[in-house]
Length: 334
Figure 1 (cartoon, rainbow, N blue to C red):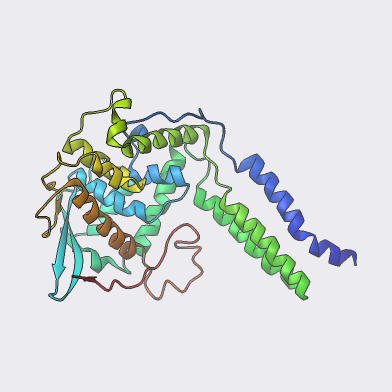
Figure 2 (cartoon, one colour):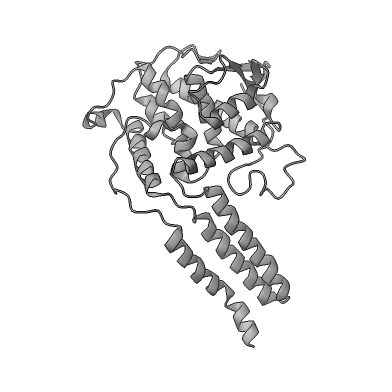
C-alpha cells in the first residue's frame, strides 16, 4: 500500500534530509588549508578548550590535563603514593598550594573548588563516585567558554543532544504507529540515520577553524622528531620551563611521549609540582609515564558516576558526550 511504501521509504527521506542539513549547517567554513608550526596555544586557551575545539567534544582526558595545568602554574601539587607489599596499590594526593585568582578562567576556578572544597589535600581515590556531578558542570562550562569566545556558534553537546533526541523520538514514534516488523525496522533505521548524522553536526565558526589549524600547528611542533627540529624557525629554546608549560597541551593532544623525547638528557630533576617515590632515575619520559598513569586514574575516578546515578538515561549527565563510568581500580601489581 501507499502507506507501507511511505513507511519503508522513511530511511531514504531521513538520509536525504540529514545530508542536506549536514551539508548546509554541519560543515566547517573553509580555513587556510595549511598548517604552520606554532609554539603555544592560541588566544591563551587552556588545555580543555584546546581539546574541545579540536575534537568538538569535552572528553574525560581534558580534566586530568587541566589538573596538571593547574599544578604547573603553582595552584596545586600532585603526589604519587603506593601502599601494600606484594600487591601494590597506587593513589594520588592532590595538595592545594594557593587559592584561585583572576588568572584562572571560570571552569578552572570551579575545578579547583570542586577538587578541594574547604580541604587543603585530597586523595584522588576519595573523589570517585563523588566528583561526577562536578565534572558535568565543568564540562558544560567548557562548552560555554568555547561558544562565548566565538569558536562555535552553539555548544557541540547541545547540537548533538538535539539530534539524538529527535532520532530516538523517530524510532519510538514511527515504530509505535507502524506495529509490524518492517515498519519497526524502518523506524529504527530512520532514527539511527538521524543519530549518526547528529554526531557530525557540530560546526566550528571561521574563528574556530582558524584556531583548529593553529592547534594542529602546535601539535606538529610538539610531536616533531629531534632531527627535524632544525626546520622550525624561531622555535623557543628547550628548557624545563618550556617542557612543563606545554606538557598539559601535549597530553590533551596525545603527543606527550614525542614531546618528552625532545627533552631526553636535559630534563633530569623532578618539578616542584609533582612527587613520585619511585623516581630515582628521573627523566622527561619517566615524568610522562607517571603522569599518564595519573591521567588514567583521574579520568576514571573523576568521571565515574555513583551507582544510583549510572542507571539513568545519561542525557542529563554525561549523555552522549563523554561522561562514563569506569570499573573499580584493582591496583597495580608490583
